[in-house]
Length: 360
Ligand code: KG4
Ligand code: ZN
Image (cartoon, rainbow, N blue to C red; front, side, top):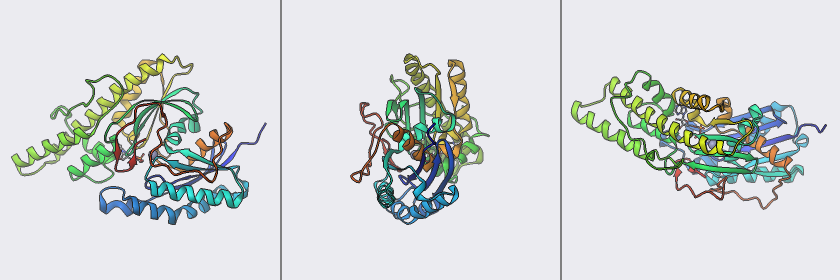
């Protein structure tokens, strides 16, 4: 039997600088250096600041990942790097670093699509069989994908504007709650009355699996301003009710669109039907519970990889790289950093490009 592949992975497409070493499915190290404090004052990721920080931190992250894994660069079988989609300066930093390492150590180089990294994570954690249905929901991504293979994805739909995490973050900002918005809106919603405000459920009246979340925050802004004009400010109860109404609108949209995506997926007659979620928003208990129930009722296995592997990290890139490597993929020194790189080139383009860069 062949020894499991040892792959070094690099990720720098948004605001996390990460390097990881995998031996087969075993994660020997997964170093993630966040940049939240660098961007905190700006209310979003500043691409130039992110790129500079990646350029400064990547080799440190690689050194630490190798050290923690207890191996040297000579021991790796391949170097995998996110080559897009994402904020171009950061992606470039990663690609240049990986090219330098690959050329210096004489190792094969593999350019990985960041979204493929997310989409293949359930295979890293649970060895899920193809084809499975995936929902990526984070601050930068929102799409349904059927994974057929490491380089074969079918996109069933996605957001045409904001990602749901972005909507949570903006809502928190509008209500004076701390960032990241997801956890603080979820906490406030726990004591709220979801029925007090009736927020829109965008695109439910249209067929298909595309979603839209930007109108929700406008509706919330209007309600907030109306209350402030009437009463001079927001009470804790107002905030809780606004958060509960907002969260249930997002939950309803994701649930209905997942129901439709599952129906399309099940038409493909998968042998072991499975649905997996990934991304920061997958941490939301209310959303997760609803999707889990939906899957149980449809007889589909529900998977949610641990959060540390759902959010941006290089272990997922190393894993995707190892599957691509095993399938014969190799990149060379002409590997390009791509701001956009749809996983499914046949699907209609998604127009959204949010605060964290292109969505596909
Ligand atoms: O996957 P992630 O860490 O980063 C990228 O977007 O790439 O996702 C972060 C997003 C943020 O927008 C954050 O507000 C959201 O995930 N999030 C949540 C929760 N925890 C994090 N959204 C809703 N409910 C949560 N509990
Ligand atoms: Zn991501």
